[in-house]
Length: 334
Length: 247
Image 1: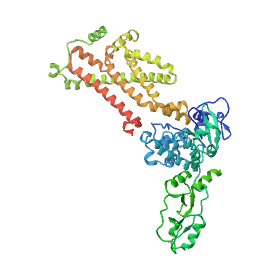
Image 2: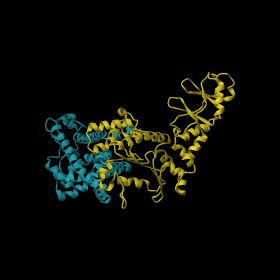
Image 3: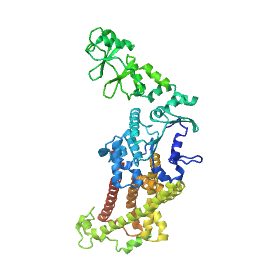
Image 4: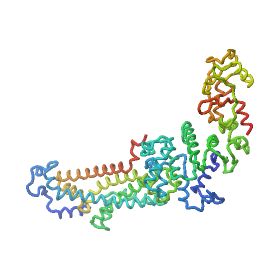
């Protein structure tokens, strides 16, 4: 992730990798081989390249656009076609309908998907992405970011990504290089350390005063150990349930069904009966899943009255409770 | 100029119209606006050859004009400093009145088809050159950068990206140039009796309506047909540039 304000040389640095811009001193090597030792067109054909303006060829169909680099590499027609259709599908478009269309017939988001597919066509080990989502509306951008992360988890490319958006860098990156005006490297670190220990005033200001909150986007509910809450099924012994709630220092009991799925919260003062009652419990409200970002979990807690969030596993069974305290402890601990 | 024409007319025989060439129809004797029978009977000996000559004149002019302009446009696209000189050169040629240009060329190349072709070609250069350069320059920077970044060589970028994208502008230039040449070529009859200009000039001097109307209409029809053919070719060759493609 290359991030920083305009004039920091992010794009310049990126373009040096595929030698769209030449450099005098120093060296860039891919897999131990200097980019200067390779033929420039061969080098570029081996590197996926995605730019903000996309740069699809307007006179080619989507399929032909995606097949560009394979054609340059001299693949067989059938193989190019199969690869193009496979990629159209991979980036979430319809191979039958969209393959024959021209770029002008697609929306901005669809075009950037094609741009991504085109860069992936020859399965390059390295991808260069220059603000690939910069020109998209916020909703489409977020969707494409998520999809790209999911895709990246499968294809595992080395991606060099340029953005001026620190949030994007934090969400997408493993390592972030913060560049400042004049091309000076201000900090090169993991997103978490950039946020928790900015190297200097410039980085601190660039990541923003809300950097503590931003760290919440780096962790998910599965990263923290939830509280094991007192739970009982309707018909269980109320006396025992009440004892458990008190022992845990809680004021509510989580009601679960026979399969262990939480159905409601019962305040302890309504546990005066002999058995845990069928009804009379409060609704659960929002429920968290292990994959949820801590930021979103905290936000859910703030938007409802309870100080806890019920977490369920992928089968809907009760996995635990998370409190705001637990979340802040998590940030302090690391 | 007049002496050339006068000499030709004198050589052509009596000025008193011999419209019918035997069996003159009453329409011809009346000098009606358009005598269909006369036209039909002279189609194969006058109009068909004249039309074919006209097409040949035009095709050669466009072919050579295109070759010169295209080469010049590629040069100007690659090396900007060539653009202005060629623009000025072709612009000057374009502005010379056609009759004057013929007159200027006769001392050098004589009363030949070559003279006519040189003049016609010179009128195509500006249009074809400008349209090709504008078409190539119209290719957006991001498309060019994407091509470069994906590993196109310069020649591949030109052949597979820039020229195809410039094709609509280039074809539009060919379209205008062709129509211009078809119309201008009639004036070539000042120099040699080739193409549809011949019948037009003869008809002007003899005041024979049918011959005049037939040749003029054929010239116009030829222009319209060529225009439509190029438009059709453009539709087929550049489907992506159709207006309905825009969302």
